[in-house]
Image (cartoon, rainbow, N blue to C red; front, side):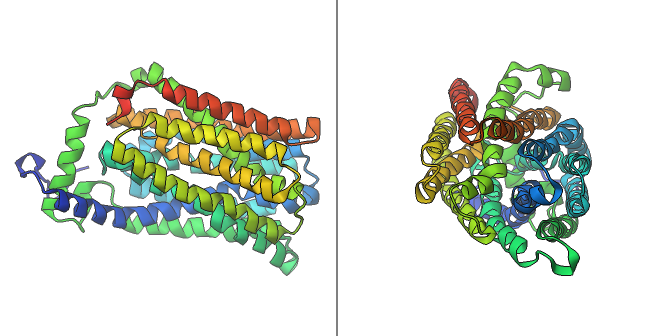
Length: 438
């Protein structure tokens, strides 16, 4: 995209560390609050079906297997449109495309309130996945336009704290809506849930259209000197990467390895996200609002863990162990949650460890592929990794639901998720350190 005032980063003298730090703080305060808000409402719309299930399942006579399939089918639509969506974003810019994504998914999420049959439930979840496809990998790609690798890990983590914050905010709010609005204006609580949590995405999409800048050169709030500093850092890093053709990227063994690592971690993420309210209820807590409050605890702990571990990773410029150790902690928490399933306090401690470990591993994972992907190849590669990884969003809730229905307990599902977390950690350690520790 052409800039009316192009900058020449080559002509700029090296900035002092304090000037550079101040410039990146300015960028972060401008970009991250909006991006975090967008992902918060996006993730809430994606997983609020876990709370809706508390009333929706009995109202619509949905079995655990039907619910699991409906929760997961979102990711089939997501998978189909992920790569095309990211390539479109790379071509037309984040401002227009992210705004389109958010408005369409917010409307579809709100319209889920009119579902009356399993088939309609499947259809709306599939359409929601189509609408949202490209948002997350698009933002990961967008951050590579602004931040070099040694700063991007922390920025990606701050962006992905929205996953945890959606649990902190969404749990109590969802529980409150279910309990307070049930029966209001002839609608059940789960219907109000979809409506009231869908509309904020539409409003956030409008904000994106007016506030988000596509590239450094388009940012009127930066001086020419600040633009030069940022552009030079990005060009310096991109010069160390090889921009590969689309076909080469999609056939790359490295990209497929990254896809498998991400799929393993996402298995854990959505197993917890979609089933956490049900697991808490199984410990003996029956009040919807209490379940919502308790579900916020693991995600609050995850916010702290994400920030601390990301700071350590960027400071040490080490990526693999900072991905693997949280992944293993998540696996341990899942296993402990089985043994402590009938004690609410101990079960919550285990689920807190599991959630914090799983969610901490995910943003730091993205420092691995973005360390060697560039240009349109990065757009395709990031989208491919995310789309394949998010197939776990289909497999995980369905498998947990099927195992729960087959065995009458959550044990087998939690063991399965723990095994995937261990696999992801081991594969992350297999990545050559020279490739990603920048």
